[in-house]
Amino acid sequence: MAEKTSTIVALELDERTVARRNAQVEHERRVAIFDLIENNHFEPVGCGAGPYRLRLGMEESRLIFDIRDAGDQPIGRVPLPIAPLRRVIKDYFTICDSYYEAIRHAPPSRIEAIDMGRRGLHNEGSAILKERLDGKIEIDHETARRLFTLICVLQIRQ
Image 1 (tube, rainbow, N blue to C red):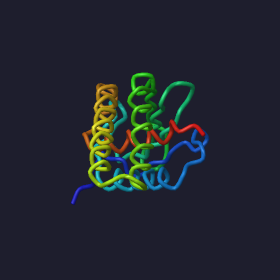
Image 2 (image 1 turned 90 degrees about the vertical axis):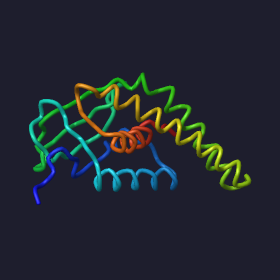
Image 3 (image 1 turned 120 degrees about the vertical axis):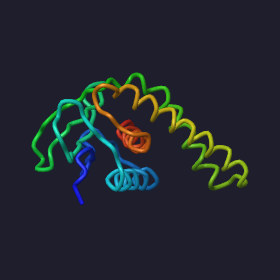
Image 4 (image 1 turned 180 degrees about the vertical axis):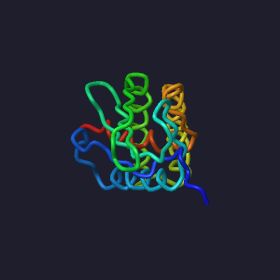
């Protein structure tokens, strides 16, 4: 079977820009990376065939997609302003806090309602990310969702 070339085979977050994370956030980060590596579509424009290694980080107010080949040699860099995602990230953090609090004290119907809102905001952030990457990196919906999770992790400031 032929190796997929439009895929991420390794991903790391630039830990220099990441604040201390609680157990829930760390779990979400691990799951997002695992799921992303298992199944993704990632095709950067002008970077040649993959598979790719991706380093995701922040520089100033820009998200940086540091794209590397399978041997970890740099082959492309895509900076993306974070401003178009700020509102949805802030709202997503707020609803996540409500969700984790509800898990401890609220009835199942309340937890389900908050979770629906949380998934809706997650989808909105993923759609914005996919739109902002158009013409730079082609990704599918599931890849956008997992990348959005990781972008949120990069935005945590404690």
